[in-house]
Length: 132
Image 1 (tube, rainbow, N blue to C red):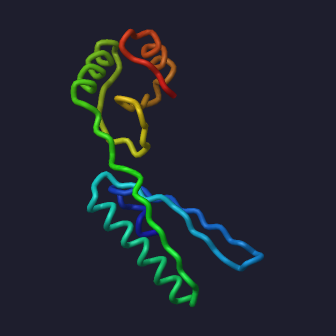
Image 2: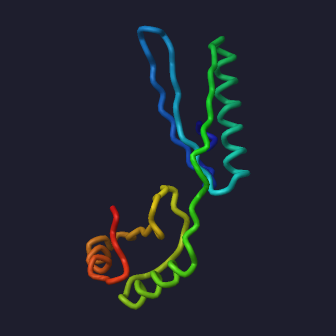
Image 3: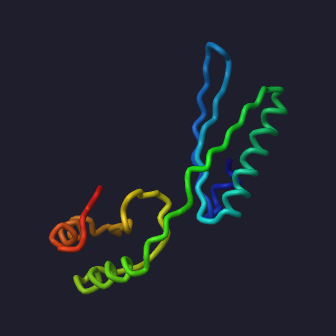
């Protein structure tokens, strides 16, 4: 889906499987977005595109959509405490959205290329734990 490659509001990943015995093709994928309008717009566009391709090739189309969950918002108090600890340890701090869901944690943190020092700092800190 080349039209989606330059849209920074959504992330899409699709896999196509062909069964040579039944001559069938299966396309599965994920659509991620931070807002419900962006998600709705993109899912609608994907389903229309696949429907059009199926109709033009006279294929039978079966489509399903599953809602996995809303983006998680990290509590401001957790972000403030983490940012202060990181800044006082000499790490640069910036905030951004994460495209990868991280269940059952208070904050997801990227290392920005400073992984060994960063991991060492978090392992030795009394308030923070590393889960991955």
